[in-house]
Length: 102
Image (cartoon, rainbow, N blue to C red; front, side, top):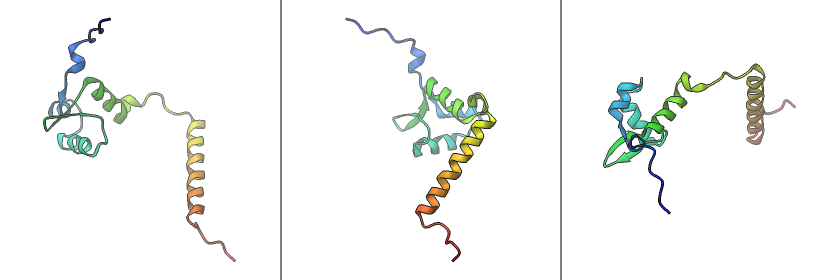
C-alpha cells in the first residue's frame, strides 16, 4: 500500500510574518506577540514565526468582517443576551452577590 501524494507543495509553504503583515492590516509586532502568547495558530521554526496558507485563511476569517459569515438574527441575539444575563446573575449569587434589604 502506498501513501497518497500531497495535494501540492503550496500546502507545505510557510508564509513569514513580515509578508503576512504586508498583506493584512496587522503589524508584524502584534502578530509576533499573539504567536508568542498562543492566541493565534502559527508555525515556529528556528526562531522565526510564520503561517501556512490554511492558518492564514483561518486568521483572516476569524478576525475580520469578511469571515464573520451571516449576521445573527434578532432572536439569536436576544437568546445570547438572555443567556449572558442568566450566567452573570448565577455567578453573582454564587459569590454572595448583593445584600438584600432587611
